[in-house]
Image 1 (spheres, rainbow, N blue to C red):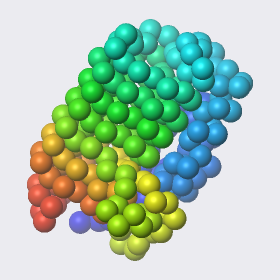
Image 2: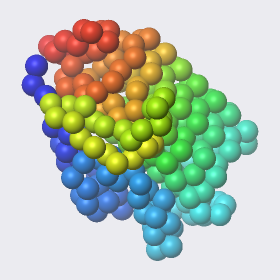
Image 3: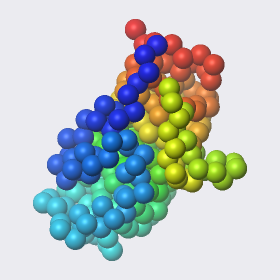
Length: 221
């Protein structure tokens, strides 16, 4: 099985105009995670066509549906036609793309979701980047802190030191995670790869793969 490239440009096709320069700035996607807040604030200061402020440092596009029982803390940017359901908790430093589903009792903190992402039920997404049309099944979480509190490494063909104590998961475009999965800190799931339900995942999952268990990863055919 061929190792997937871990470079930002190979994992994501970012077509959102205001985000393109930010994604192009970083060779690897985890490098952008510590800079999400400052980037959001810079965009809010300049403004975006078709977006309006609905609270302090909360910039929202057209036709966004927000449940009155959801809580949004800025800074945050939410793209048009996104649905934010009952009990969703956006803790700040969050960018959500267009046509996304932000589900009931889900929590988001310091993360980026590109377009058409679905995180619909009882999920946690912290210090993570989720690509276009990626999906988290019910109850799956992006764990962002190691038990020993040490810095997170990305374990691919070589080990990459992130120099960060908190880092969740990187899901490339079209990555699909089944219900009840734990994505350990620093997990990278390549393009068009899937994870079966109830599987703990760590390290790098190559693109076009299926994770059937922690010990069994097969090529998608």
